[in-house]
Amino acid sequence: MNDMKSERSNDNGAITEDVVRYVAKLSRLSFSDEDVAKYKKQIGEILGYITQLNEVDTADTQPTSHVLPSMKNVFREDLVKTSLSPDKALSNAPDKQGDFFRVPRVI
Amino acid sequence: MDTLTSSGIKGFREWIKKANKSIGDFTGIFVDRAKDMDREIKGFIEIDKKSIVSRAEQNKCQTDGRLWGIPIGIKDNICIEGELTTCASRILQGFRPPYNATVIEKLTSNGAVLFARANMDEFAFGSSCETSCYGPTKNPHDLSRIPGGSSGGSVAIVASGQVAAALGSDTGGSIRQPASMCGVVGLKPTYGRVSRYGLIAFASSLDQIGPITRNVTDSAEMLEIIAGYDEKDSTSVNIEVPKYVNALKKDINGMTIGVPKEYFIDGIEKDVLENIQAAIKTLKSMGAKIVDVSLPHTKYAVSCYYIIAPAEASSNLARYDGVHYGYRSKNAADLVEMYTASRTEGFGQESKRRILLGTYSLSSGYYDAYYLKAQKVRTKISDDFKKVFSVCDCVVTPTSPTTAFKIGERMDDPLQMYLSDIFTISANMAGIPAISVPCGKDKKGLPVGIQFMAKPFAEETLFNVAYAFEQGV
Image (cartoon, rainbow over all chains, first blue to last red; front, side):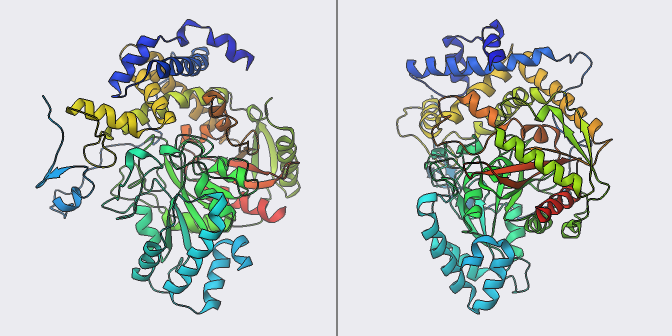
């Protein structure tokens, strides 16, 4: 844990309350000032710990987005198959009208 | 009913045979029994007797089905058509999937009786089962302690014998870590071995469904049933499913087992370390060749994981916006306000923390420093395993550095909580199979787990060594 403490003071890990608010907005979440302060601290600590990745030399390393060596697009025959009925697709809708999902006004 | 508690699928199968009752009748008995046993443990979010019994009665599988009548617990993130499936989150309140997960189809076509709604950390975000919006599950071995997580409910109901076996999901240890803490067997299959269709996504490049069982034999039997290629999951792999039960051999003579030094570090509880070291001696005495190996990037696995998993999670959780299903806030005047209010009111704290973390590491300006860097370190972690598996058949490690901790102990320190998955995360990063098997108890009487990992699609090696170990101790 001592290592972690020293890394937490590293600038790389520090984030500001404005950054938390900005990322919250991107995430469509809203927070009280108190929550913003809490997340700033917690996420700052986690990011501080994560800066240890900088120790690893990855100059010649390819990134792994997926572990399967043979990942490729999978196509199927273009055949008509049964899909969900509108009733079933709408069965969980919080609000609906006819065959549509209903939402509050957009503009 | 006593043998039911301890002997897994076989015990339930024999009880059913002897009872000579209709499937509806004995399922009703199993449900009442589970309800009674679960009163304090709270492994289930709820137990819907009517629904469980009527599903059992409607199942067209004949009595010779491999799991005919056997009660199997299902984690609350695996879709069962028409059954509440909520990931223990308010944001999926009331959600009843319009289709079955592929694993659910496979279980029912083999005659299993589904016990839905095993509790979990919200969206599988957690290592203690405490972030469920329905409250925590308790460890059956000590009700003041957590069962581990995120599949804490699935594991607790198997450990207490309420069901014969259960399905969980494992993204960074969510099957193995709780299995270790509750003294049962938990398997994370190779990535691509089991279809993820109908598993509500957390981190799509890491998630796998796997069995939680009382013994290694049941684990092999369950995997044989749920594994296989599925055209509905393009990441499932088209490799024939072996007869895993044939791999259950007591003989490990000549097997080479690696002991990676990076897994035997400060911070492991003394009792855990002693049990694992004794187990390694046992394996040696059974004829295994024990070799020292090194997985040098192990210490970066947690960092790597807490970039990649939240990044994928923040994308996967973007779909919860109050439009199509689940919770919608009434406190909104327009569409964007509705999205924001629904998400803010619907997600719990840990989900929000991970969405923030993931969105941050994917956002412009930080992507290269965090996400891309983590993906590169992930390659290093996988390469470590490739090297090691060229000299040994499997590696052995503790599953978790500690036994079950107290409820509430780590809730305010997310980093400390994240570090409890330090030994399980690497298998997900590399996509390799791993199994946790009971390995005695500590001085407090709490279960310890031992983990075996092998190369991709070498589940048979795991069943062989795990079975030999289980039978040998």
